[in-house]
Image (cartoon, rainbow, N blue to C red; front, side):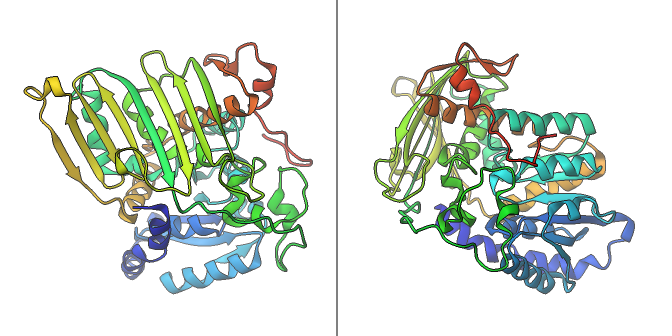
Length: 430
C-alpha cells in the first residue's frame, strides 16, 4: 500500500471501530479509564487517536496544538466520535500538568518529540510518542534515559511491530529458516514525494504561535514548506526519508537480527530530482557494517518501482533462501541449489489501521500491567539512533566508526558534532 493511499485511509478506517468503542465507553468503570492528553493535532494524530479510541477504556480529555485551525478541527472530530468535547491548550505543558491525564500522546513534528515526552515522564505520566524518537542520536538517548529514570511505560509509534505477518517473518529469520543471513536490504521508492516548490518567506497564518512551533529549533522566517507535513524534509525539524521511513523498515531488520550496533556507517546521496527549497536528500544509500551482517538502506523519490517491482521492502538474504517482507505480506524464495530442501512459502497480509490499534492495545495493556511494550524505548532508541547515524555519515561526508559503549563516533569531531542539535534558548534538554 503506498503512503498516499495509507494516509487517505487513516481518517476513515478506524472510525467505525471508534464509534463502536464510544458506544461501549460508558460501561467502563471510571477507575478503569485511561485518560489521554493529545499533544499535536497534525495528520498522524488522527491515526493515533483513532487507534486509541478503538478501545473502550480510553478517553481523550485534552488536546494541544500551536495552530488554532488544527486544534478546532481535532476537537470537532473527537466530539463526533465520543460525544464529548476535550479541553484545549496551545502549550504542551498545560497538558502535562493536568491531574486528569494518565497518558500523553505525542504527535508533534519530530523536533518536538523529546521535550513533551520527557516532561510527561517527569510528571509521572506514561507516554506514546510518534517515530522517530528524536531528531538526533543524543536527544534520542536522553528520552530513553528518562524512561529508565522515571520507570514510565513508553511506546514508540512504529506500529509494524504489532503486525502479525511481520512477527511471523522475523521469527522465521531468527529460527534459521532461510539459513545464515549475511545481508539485509531496506528500500523505499516513493512516488508520492513530489516537488513542493520554493514559496517565499512570509507571515505565519493567523492563529499560529510560530515561536512555539519552532521551540528548540533555530529561529527562521516562516515558510509554508517548513510547516506541517513538509517539516520532515528540513534538517532543523527532521531527517528526511532516512529517518521518516528508515525507522519503519530498519526497525524490522533490527527486530530480526538482534540488538547489535553497527561498527561503521557510510552514506551518499543528494537532491538530484527535486528542485524545491527542501534540504534532505531525494536519493540516498547508506551501508551499515554490523558485526555479523551488512545492512543497506536506500531511498528514491518520484518513482514507485523499486527492486522486485516493489515500492518498499525489507529483504533478508540467507544462505538457503531470501525472505522479502513488506506491508502486503512476505515470501520465501529458495536459492537455486537449495530448492530440494527449502520450502518456498508466501503469506499475503494487508497492513491497515487495525495494526495501529493493536499497537495501542499493547501499550494500554502495559500501562495496566507495568510491563514493557513491544516498542519500548530500549528498542525505540536503538532503531532511531541507527537511522540517525545514516544522516550523520552523510552530512559529515565520512565513513564513521561507532563506539556503541561510549555512544560516540571514534576520532571524528565533525560527526560527533552532528550527534546532537543545539537547542534555541530558553529550551533545554532535561
